[in-house]
Amino acid sequence: MLIALRGHLGIETAEKIAAVLMLALSGVVVFALASNYDLPSIVEMEARGLGAGVAFDIVIATAFSWIPLAADYNRHCKSLRAAVVGTWSGYVTATLIATGLGASVSALSIAIGFLRPMTRPSC
Image (cartoon, rainbow, N blue to C red; front, side):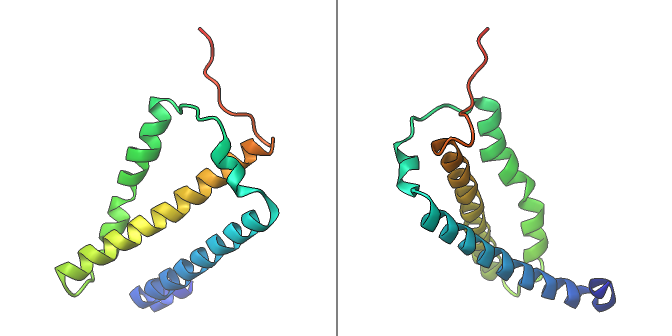
C-alpha cells in the first residue's frame, strides 16, 4: 500500500531496502555455512554431469529471463556509461552471489548426506 501511495519513489525506496536486506541475508547464510559445516569438503566431491537441459536452464535461460528486469532498473540512469557499468556490475555480482550460494548449499547437502546426488536413469 505504501508503494502505491508513494508511487515511483516508494518503489525505488523499497528496491534499495530489499537489496540491502538480500545482501545482509547472503552474508548471514555464508557465515552460518562456514561456522557450522566443513565447506572445503565440497571441493573434494566427485564431479557429476547435470545433463544438457539443467545446464541450459542454469546458464542460459535463467540469465536471459532476468534481462528485462535489469533493463527496467537502468532506464533512469543519467548516462550510458552509468547504465552499462551499474547494470553489468550489479547483475554479475548478484548472479554470482545467488548461484554461488545455491551451488554451495546443494553441494554441502550432498556432502553431509542430506541429499543423494542426481543419477541418470538406466535405459
